[in-house]
Image 1 (cartoon, rainbow, N blue to C red):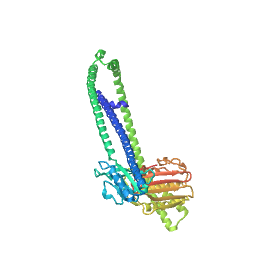
Image 2 (image 1 turned 180 degrees about the horizontal axis):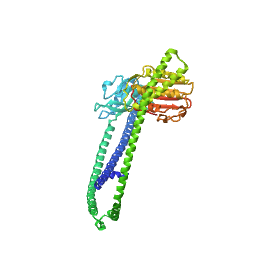
Image 3 (image 1 turned 90 degrees about the horizontal axis):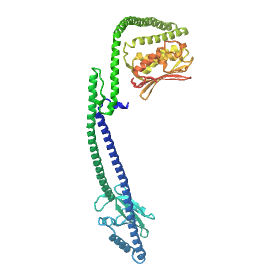
Image 4 (image 1 turned 60 degrees about the vertical axis):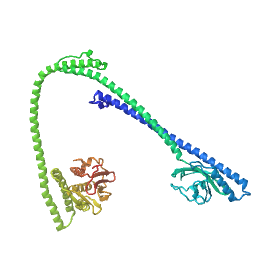
Length: 548
């Protein structure tokens, strides 16, 4: 099976395809190398970022703690005999002079615990302002969080964004803050995190150069190998074509006369193995050719005898076919004539029953006759439909489904009563359907007829018509013997219970109509009850399977 991919392919094309597959593997390998390098870089970038942040955290913690040592030393030495306000101003002035870098970073900021700015060497306009509720671009309450964190025993870190002095751009920043409780100060400093991105960007550029180098090296190697492969292909193809030409010339000569191939003409050992088999084949063909000539001398006579026998058989078959067609036409004519002849007396019987009931009222014998007549009428309608269905198109129309079902129930009430049954109708009003009334009647009538025939004596027959989502459901429920095979009951002439009699055509007609109109049929049967469920899409259109 796998060799089918080489069907009608040349050796050159197969070789090229092989080289193409190798090239794809090279590309895949290169992609994997680049992918692994990129993943390693991403891991390295994460590590660099973590290491940088950890290093900066240690640095700013060290700076804040050193400032606090200075503040504490000055406080312990002077607070007893120097004015508090004057001492605080001296401390702040000294810190502002001692800390800070040329790029405007590394400065110490000081706030009171209620958010009042006491020292900000760069943004002097903020000194004296209460920034407790100040929020950065991401909504972080910067000063509030720093004050809250500074009250911890070891202080703490807060991430936020702040305008970087040199660039004037809002930049991610991390600060460390710790409280000086005697004066209720929050002392802190921070570092901007854009520097780590510069380091990572430089590494990315180096990685890009490295990957380009890898790709160029691999591409160059691939081109060289591909060129060598093409050269090898040309040499191999030339040798193979030469051997194939030798075989081609031999077969042309061998087709006209009896010759064999000379093994010394073949150079490749793989093709030499074929010489023995080819010569054997040629010898066998010529032996068989001789034998065929002998057979052909007697075959023509046998063919003439067989041809004559076939002519005789064809004449007999033609006569049999003509007789069969005549018989079928006669049978079809008999059925049509019988149905036509039944219609008139049946109509007379039904009419006189109605007249009798009008003159003399109901009686049990007349009810039995009427029920039997209606059963005959139902059988007549089935036979009439069977004869006409392949020659007539039954036009569709909008039908009041609710009224239609109730009308057919009224028709079958006499039959049900004669069999000691009562029909219970649970019909939702105002349900319409687009369908042929004749075909709809065949579905309803055959189900009612079967329900009356097979339901247990003195039990109710329940007919339901209701809408569910976009579907219209018609159900016939009886208390009857379990149907063993719910699929075969729709086959023609099948009878689940032979004692009940009948032709077994009713459900076959129902099944054919449902299949044509895409009506879903579901039969549920057990030892207690049997339900025939028909599902119509609203409006009369249904695309589901017909029978389940």
